Image 1: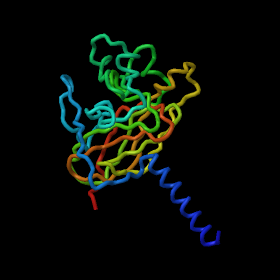
Image 2: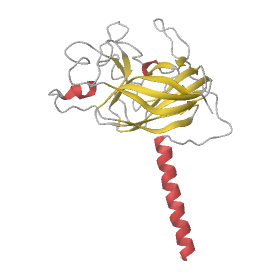
Image 3: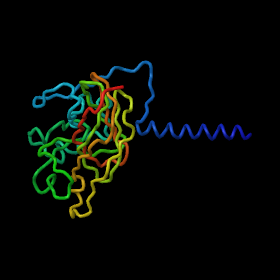
Image 4: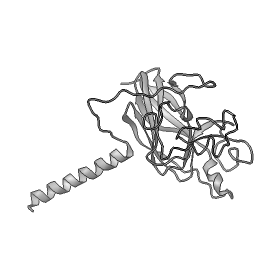
Length: 241
């Protein structure tokens, strides 16, 4: 093999490696000319009446779109580990919230020092729904209505035992790159399971260019998992240039 052939082969392998990594993390996607129209719908039920969630404003993760596995979300298994499992199916709204879907959902509890413990950085509101038991490769869609085009800062209420990373897509295209999430682990807490309940509010995690209109926002779990994701706050900081 000649020197030029060796250099070409080395460059080919390098490009193939990074393409594989970026595709795996959801930071780029393959675009086809015959993409199917999105079949998901904004979440609604008899208690929560709404269309697309509004930006600027608070976007609730547990109100991910309707449409099921492969359309509105992808989860590593079909069982909701929170609603109807950890939280018994007793007929209550919170315990049975979306219990027949694969995304794992639960809510914050103010008893036995669960989500109001002294080892967390912030105390979340009581009875706040959230997405939990997250694994790398999982994702969920949120239909949003952006009121004004511009650059937006995004903040997050979350827990993360090991730290990790997420990424965000807007209509299938990555915005904001890889968003790192700091660990909320606290070695002073003597109760092991409560490491999943140390809440923190990460302010201005990333700046995202968003255009006016209705869009599908996709939250990807990229690294580590073991996160609870309650909501994303979007605040507009400048006009689109």
